[in-house]
Structure formats: C-alpha cells, structure tokens
Image (cartoon, rainbow, N blue to C red; front, side):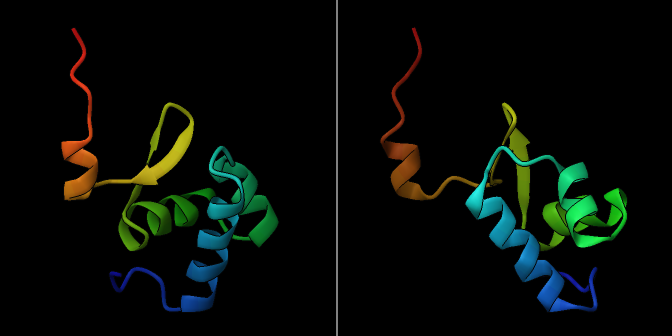
Length: 74
C-alpha cells in the first residue's frame, strides 16, 4: 500500500465493499463512505492496486497460475 491515505481503516472498508460487490461504482463507495470520488479512486488504484475491467473491480496483475490457465482466443 502507498502512503496515499493516512487512514488504513478507510482502505479496509473500501476493500470490503468491493469484495462484497465487485460491480460497485466508485461514486457509490464515495457516497457510502462520505469521502470524495477522487479519494476513492486514488485508494482503489494506488492503495488496493485494482482497476475496473468490464464494470468489475479486479486486481491489476494476474498471478502465475491465472496466466497459465488462460485459453487463447482464436
């Protein structure tokens, strides 16, 4: 985690919200947490190292097992 946020409890709460619903919008998280949309985005991208992929939050990097189990698209 980066030094972006000075409150690890907020980071943990945002992570829990994403794990409960991977399709949750950052705007919705911001409203629930009472913090800015920009701060939520920064926490998600920098502290949690996640990105939005087809409206679903996923880790940025695949692990080795995930890479080897990928099926090529023809």
